[in-house]
Length: 363
Ligand SMILES: Nc1ncnc2c1ncn2[C@@H]1O[C@H](COP(=O)(O)OP(=O)(O)OP(=O)(O)O)[C@@H](O)[C@H]1O
Ligand SMILES: [Mg+2]
Image (cartoon, rainbow, N blue to C red):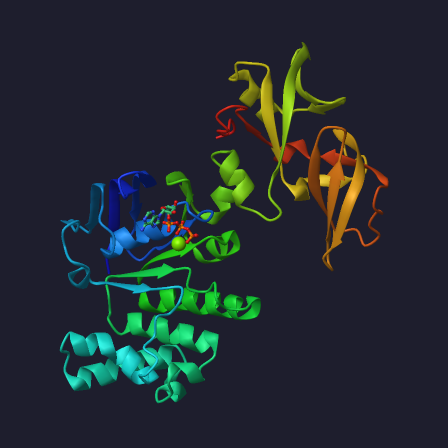
């Protein structure tokens, strides 16, 4: 297996579309690295540059110590699984999986052994004689993965491989791909726009927006210490709430004011504010850190706009005169539409962001 390094990689399409800008990161050997970000942020472009399917405008990509910019795709020892599977419709599952090895002139016996082994890993041994149109979506997806496995590549690249599957099958395939990673000790680079997929599968997550890296971290760090407002809002469902506040420093201890509400700050956030110039700051608070009632102060009088009951909890869409935000409640008796509701912010869990740059002040 292998480590992949991207050094200041930039991609400009057709002379003027800046798709990826100065991306610089490492995919450690045997890691499960996820590239996540909204549509158009450059995920597929990065993956295709690693695979050699797209030219690199600037910068270098290495596999271990070898610079691969000019190495043709077939010599990179990388296998890619695409979103649309791209199976050959007229070939059986066996032939689909064997095809790449046959092209590379592997001995028949070796091909047979590798295909059977991969089929067993993926529980598709009983499907080897079928053609793709007689398979379910999940089975087709497994064949596409199998075609990559038989190659014994140094690096696996997955581009949104589960987006065509229904929700239940997605969860199942998610587990299977994670298991596959454990079993093959493979280096995997996995692209998705789904932050749940990213959080559940990745041990290293690269969050991208508009062609630039926003943060690289493990799932826990991304959630609890987002580097900026974008990451705070992208990771977590429903997303973090943001409220523009004024810093009030009347009585020695700073507080944050918005509309006619005033939030007290614990020593941690007090010391964060000591380093802030200017008199405003963006408060970030997650839905689960807004509680119903007067729990320990920092209360806000709101009106209920919408309640989304989700079985074991409910999402409350709340509004004040100038702000709206979402709270998560596990109350069974949820309030009604348009009812007044007092909630409290758990400021111990709050995040502060620079009002202009959006960078976290809490790191
Ligand atoms: N062949 C191309 N020519 C010109 N622009 C392109 C080309 N391919 C992609 N782009 C542009 O580059 C940017 C990044 O595209 P890319 O396909 O990498 O995004 P993505 O993050 O994979 O999005 P999605 O989640 O929708 O697949 C987009 O603005 C896109 O319009
Ligand atoms: Mg894409």
